[in-house]
Amino acid sequence: MGDTLSTKDRDLTGRVLEPVHKQRSGARGGSAPANIDGRGSTKRVETKSESVRKIVREFGWRLVGELALALYRHALLEDENSIAIHEELDDTSGEIVVHGDPAYLPPWLQKELNEKISEKIEVEDLDSEESKAPAKLKHELLLKELVDIGLLSRREISRILTCPKCSSPRLKLRLYCPNCGSDAVKSTRLIQHIVCGFTDTEDRLEKVGDELRCPLCKAIIVDFETQTRVLGRTFYCEGCGLTFKQPNIRIRCTNRETLKHEPNYEFDLLSTSVRKLWGYRLAPGKESNPLEVAMILEESIREFSAESKIPLEVYSGRGTLGIEKLPKELKSAGFTVIIESVDGKIVLVDLASGKEPLQYVMKASLLEGKEDINYILLTTPATEAEEYWSKTGVGAGSLEGNIEIIRIVEGGSFGRLIRRIQKVFSGGQG
Ligand SMILES: [Zn+2]
Ligand SMILES: [Zn+2]
Ligand SMILES: [Zn+2]
Image 1 (cartoon, rainbow, N blue to C red):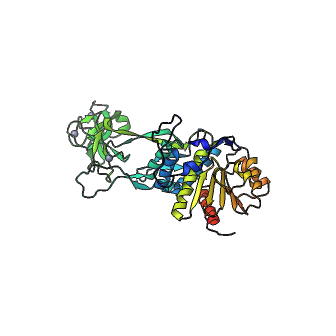
Image 2: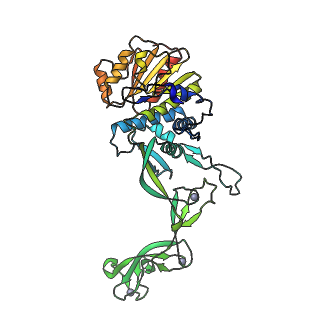
């Protein structure tokens, strides 16, 4: 199929440029063409960009776009062992939530990721009149999908115990008397009255006014410290009076928002489930190869276009060959994302990788005087690219004609990119 391209072009980073107009057919309609692999078989496999499209539609272009840039920023600035987002047990809500350094994951993004959404799977009804589906946190679904498509990698941080039926971590330990089954069990000290040898729990000492009396020899214990010996601790049942070393341990699930079991469902230790808590970051290697992040940006911008009814063609920068309006010298340059409107306006977006800063400056110089073509560079403060750029006189974050630099900071950069795109394509000036 891809035989219309006789000589393969390469962009400045050496990537092979593929014609993208072929892949675009059917992209919007939902029914994508069959994926034809190298051997010519027509096995239908969901392509990565189709998966990304589904994720963007399900979770919204704003959230997914900002998250992708936030993770990209983390991957560029931190070492390969650090994690950008991690799960933890929230003490207040008793739920597993995601948390991240605000430098990468600003509070609004964390809040949105921890939103509860209904799970799509069916639950067996437990004679309940309401048929509410159990709510899952958004991050549990979104991050898992991003791991599934290979964009994120995750690693286990720790483990917590969860309910075997509803998976809630809101559990309470319950102790029962092995003799009578009462839960009136407490841990207490085992003491010995030294003079007579009386040995029992300290609760058995008789109270006489403010004083304690030995029930065996009837002597008043004047000085507890010197007249008794503490032998250790033991459990004591206030129901039947038995002392024992090992109570029956049961776990109670305190989650009342589930239909999977009755309130106060209890189970034994061996039935407990384990939930791993994960840490996430951009999959290794992606920081030097922003193509995957580009795919997210591409789909998020495409979804924005559909939602805002500004008709745009969006390509992630595997090639520029399909764009007729693009001058020859720019076609071979290669951009992360290219956006084109029906009236021929073009926005070129680059995601700076921190390497080869010169290429961005060169591209910008090619755009001088071409007012129908806008260039936006997404960069992090620490990349050489931005440093280099600032030396050329264009201030970071400034709106210099058709060129803009957007710093990827604190989860607002994608929104800023979208605003700029909106401005260009809705005809706004200035
Ligand atoms: Zn439960
Ligand atoms: Zn005594
Ligand atoms: Zn008992």
